[in-house]
Length: 252
Image (tube, rainbow, N blue to C red; front, side, top):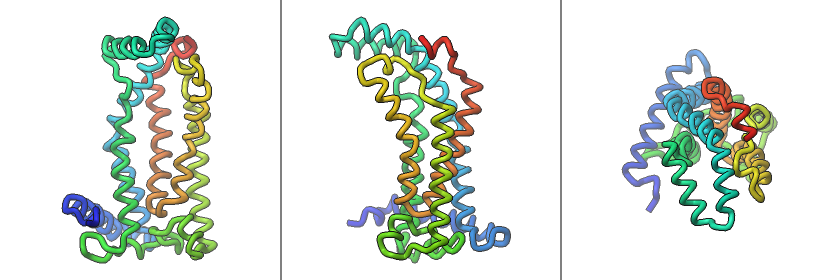
């Protein structure tokens, strides 16, 4: 059975398809042939606007983790040879402080299906039993359903495609580098434990994973990723001012 023919999934895809096509039609007199690409950008901005409360929750969670770092370091030193006791005491600390170790994960969890929907819309020739006209939409002569790796694999890579994909991926890399420099993870309790410094380096490397993903997904999904990382950077910089991580806390 085709997963995408399952009624709830098929209906969701059809609704997203209708929304994008309607938005592209409205934009066509203004944006011309790039209307579908602009529609994807506007949809991304709409999703990110809806997710602002989860971004606030994530900023609060970052502030809480930094505030609790000295206490977590103390627990790690005190119970370094008793892992189960350390886990219990850590969870008790979070409960006493009314904090949650996985708080702030909502943006990632909510965005995952959105990216999946956009990826699917520009991957399948048929949506809910009708032809997928989105695949005929282009931006600078590059189909929104094309991917960089796919184009290389089937030999259809053109000079305009190289230029468009390069701009998208390089912009994502630039945003990732700015994010790494301005929002470098604070050395908290994990940094003082064996392997903690390596974990911080890994977090820095993961900033660039979106650029790698953009090379494999359709151009439409790559546009979604670009707008998302740019929005996320701007939002985190604004929220860091609203919920600052005190220098004294970060150095504890």
